[in-house]
Image (cartoon, rainbow, N blue to C red):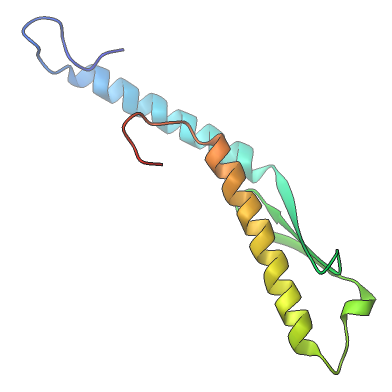
Length: 107
């Protein structure tokens, strides 16, 4: 559907509005689909796992008993951060793949 009329190169506002509405529907469908997916970020050879929805909501943090050293809580904190980053990167990759492509947009 072209937003430019064929007569005299006029601008077709109805076509533009229809395209915008279609894009909105595609975005809403993609966001709904993402929210139903889950990813799991891992760190330390599976010592820490973070599960997150495609919408970025953390649903579970699993810590292996051997990761919980009371004398070294800093390493555990680093592992949790690394697992969160891994899960977040997976969510971003899912979102990039699921979102409709917009011609002329840089993302």
